[in-house]
Length: 330
Image (cartoon, rainbow, N blue to C red; front, side, top):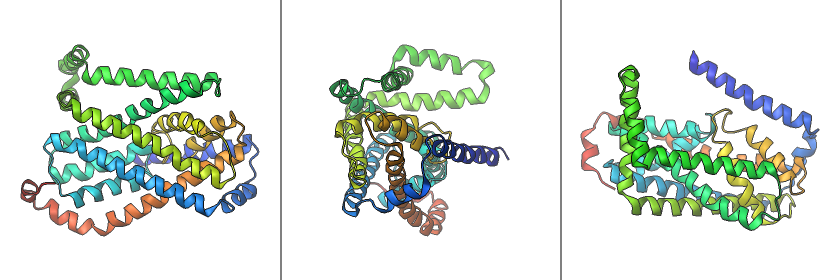
């Protein structure tokens, strides 16, 4: 019942945000539909191609984290799990929902729940680090172009949150203080589980080269992703500096990680309207740009979902044969 109520609330939030956006900004739905329908096909195809490349690199980033954890999974099986996570993230709150699907899927297969959670969490954290690596130089280069307190405060909040997370996970002093807290008697079993997971993540501090490579790859992904939306903008006839996309999209991406709307729908459109309006893009075109970007997620997710569903039977057979996991390597 709690899950049903939670899902209903998030769907309601998405609907409310969209209604609020259209009503407040007086966006005409027929005109919006015409904008989307008239988008240049060449630029859309180019944007989708770049979008897919970013996801392929995202898979490679996760695969890199699995190896030091001692998790051995056939490559095909891993790809299907990744595709399934992308599919379910459309219907679940933000990309975090898809992460939970990946955890549930591989935990049942490998029987290494703690290790799988650690890699998925670090994969998401790595993306967040790459986001900050892009947004800082982009904002410094474009500070004269975007003199806005909302943008600046958003960037400061994103960087501050990352610093706190990194200290909790990898600083020795903070790490031991956190562990001491979770081992207190009144924390019970939950404290032990969190402490064990924290230790698993902290172990990665011994793989500095791996983390550095992972962060660099994440920065490349964060550089590529705005290119996809830039092509969408060109398809709609929007002509603004690419630097704006490097500044705004990481901020929008960080905020839409909050699990308050289904697939970030509604929240993302409002953010596009707010940020891109600051550089002269009409709110109607900004929403069209956001919806076309979301359509890429839906198309890619649907393809991944098809592969995921078609292999359900094989995955169940594999789950009943755990011994094969030990014999298979990358």
